[in-house]
Structure formats: C-alpha cells, structure tokens
Length: 63
Image 1 (tube, one colour):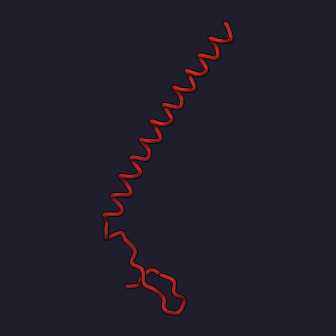
Image 2 (cartoon, helix red, strand yellow):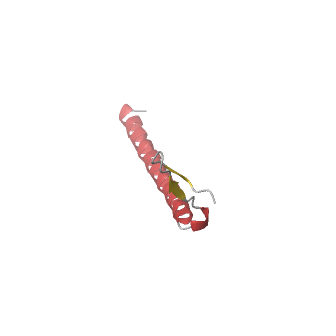
Image 3 (tube, rainbow, N blue to C red):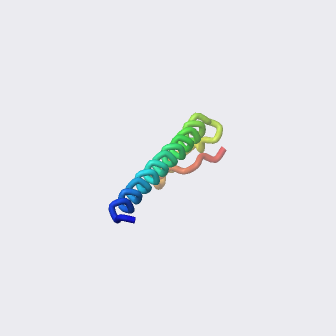
C-alpha cells in the first residue's frame, strides 16, 4: 500500500477515535452534573457546620 494511503487511514482513524472519546466524555459529564444537582437539592443529606470559637474552624454540628 502506498504510504500516503496509510497516513490518510491513520488520520481518519485518529479523528474517529477523538470524536468518540469527546462524545463519551460529554455523556459522562452530563450524568455527573445530573447527580450533583440532585445531591445539591437534597437538604436532608446536607451536613450542618458550626464554627468552633476556640480554633475558628467549622466542624459538623452535633444534634
């Protein structure tokens, strides 16, 4: 096979692989965004924090 044909096939294959990877990455990010939105809108699962007056850091609220 002529080298130019092999190079062209390699470029086309690389472009197809890049397109597939981009499409898959967008799908995964869309799913992660949906999960984050659901978790952010759930106030029951949120951890309440209270400022510790001695250290100034925030710690989970007990009770």
